[in-house]
Image 1 (cartoon, rainbow, N blue to C red):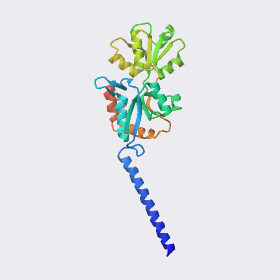
Image 2 (image 1 turned 60 degrees about the vertical axis):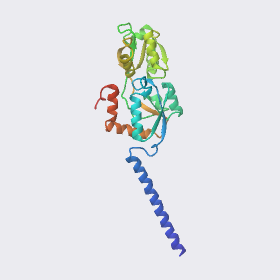
Image 3 (image 1 turned 45 degrees about the vertical axis):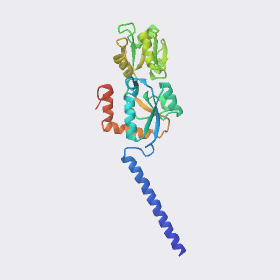
Image 4 (image 1 turned 180 degrees about the horizontal axis):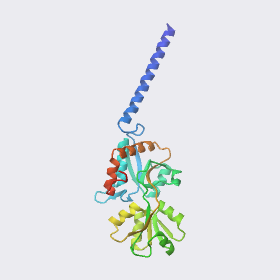
Length: 272
């Protein structure tokens, strides 16, 4: 009688374990069906961004709210993945170092993927194609028409501090005075004011400033130079990497990414 009772208890215990396993699988399936990742759904994450990088992230002067391509895309990603976002506005260097230190959960600020950064940062899949970098000056027909001209003149060239443009200048020029600025808008103003001879930076940002804010006082010259894709940066082995990549894929598949891209750049991405 005691032996049979033990057998019955064992069967009941096994049934309970199977029921619990089934519930766990149901919970996981529910998370997938809702479009969110069960491990991040309902959580709030701190995302760093640079609010001076138009049109990717900046403050709308009319509404005093953070806006831009990066912001709209990150909002769509977080909604698709099921988590909430709190933005922390910092300069590019602070965002990068904050990700490396684990201060922020993610950073979306037109951050280029480089081999050096990949040693300390986990990147999402690219969300913006190779942007390239380009030179800008205050005189359209002046002496400087290319980076080679700037080097021949021993010019002072402004750029964004900690950017791939600064890296490019350091690696590819010997006779320019590199002047890095924490806020690249200050570099643009320095060109217009004549404090530096030229500025080298990401083409989308320079073109936006030239077309929307420079009022005919700054011009691009020369050919677009090499650049890298933009991606969302995260601390290494962070739980957001997979959910963000899955959300980005969904947004591309359902057309949401293309809609956001067209809103900010006036055209659909190439190949769509």
